[in-house]
Image 1 (tube, rainbow, N blue to C red):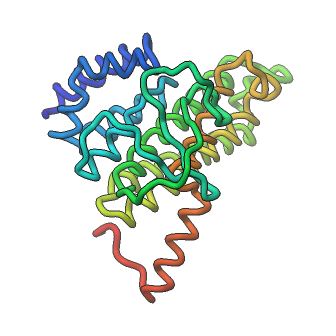
Image 2: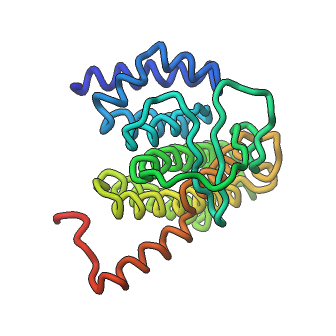
Length: 262
């Protein structure tokens, strides 16, 4: 897929996600050839589709397909997925109408008994891109706010404390993106998911502070992205858990593997 084709696909996906979410988006993406894209070009499907899910705030049950594809199992099922704290959940398809049990009630996650072991690398990369897109969406909302508002007769964007928070957020997100681009094995995927989760939580914290009081209310779109980041961080292992797991692997192996050739 060349650059022009990728740009056209990205624009089509963005428009689709702006008008549909949940089961409706599942159906629309099926019509657009999601299964073929995942099978033939996963290196395009994961960063493009999941990052756009984060940026638009839409959601779909695509993580199920990513995990099933990595396990060489037929698409369309609902595998049990590990969640932070030792829990397991399923991402229900088709809109059963049952509210999700997570902080983000829009996501149809339901608690289930412990599931069978499944490959998690591809799913962690997909969630990493989703978290990255969510972080970018929060940063864009905060940036718009500080450019439009004034405080004490000065543009809010002129205050050094505000600029530092947004700069720290940008650095965290760019670093997570670099880690995701470099991830090509299980350990790299683990570290990329951890970096993306940490970056999204950094974005949530700093952007909420920059937005002030309105950032803590349901009147502003930020709250949807904050809840989304908190839930997605916990799915397939939180940033804290994955960092500890990576440390354990390094300690047991008595060396740190080279993840990127510089």
